[in-house]
Length: 99
Image (cartoon, rainbow, N blue to C red; front, side, top):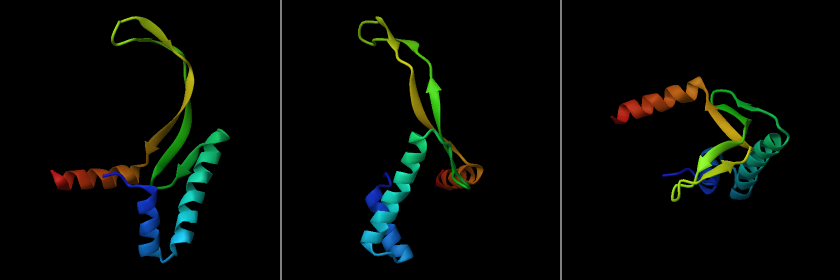
């Protein structure tokens, strides 16, 4: 199950004690800050969690899967995320306990 913004708001309400309006503003502001930083071409480093950054991808050849016709895939900029060591360790520990 995916974690949604609404669930984040609810958890801030339950666990931190913010009222729902404050919790929603907090979550919205957090994502606005991330979005603004990426729009400015800045890297985002969240200690203990991971890094977000922009990566430029060059144009490359692709294929239409139905016809096999070669078509160009245009150059573009994508957002990448690299998880930090602490996050990797916690996920590995969780996944290991489920197997």
